[in-house]
Image (tube, rainbow, N blue to C red; front, side, top):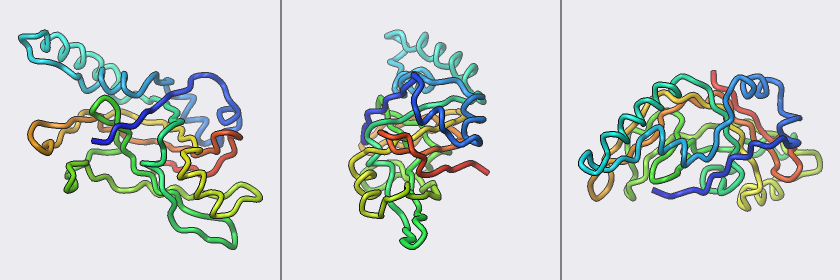
Length: 204
């Protein structure tokens, strides 16, 4: 499973202040989350065998899940978005385009996902359908400039999500991989440096 370095910024910034009001309303109802890896470890429970203290770990994970399941959380992903965000169709005339988001954020050998994967590819990676984000290029931009932003990991993702449980899949070579099954309530894409909004996706 490919590991992504995911950072969550909890300090105020331009993109927070100028966020679309529909997104801001959901964000304000959510709890700002710390590191993705820490959340995944607590929710899924990266536990050893019971003889080595795994029983206590599993108990703590169950308690954490009970408190977190069904509650809204908010995270900002500022790095390594090139693996999950891709350019889609582009309408050159009006500047509209689509960003394809793979809703799979890996950390600590696990992941937070939109829904739950049901199968893996030939390399053993869970298969997830795209979230298609309708987007608009900032004034003065062209498709080549936007493509460079995507490929250079210069876009910031802000996500409001609701954990719903734990998913599991057989791991290639043996064992089981697990992750946080979540409902992504909203995804806001902005230019990292300026905070300009690029795209917004809201769950129906």
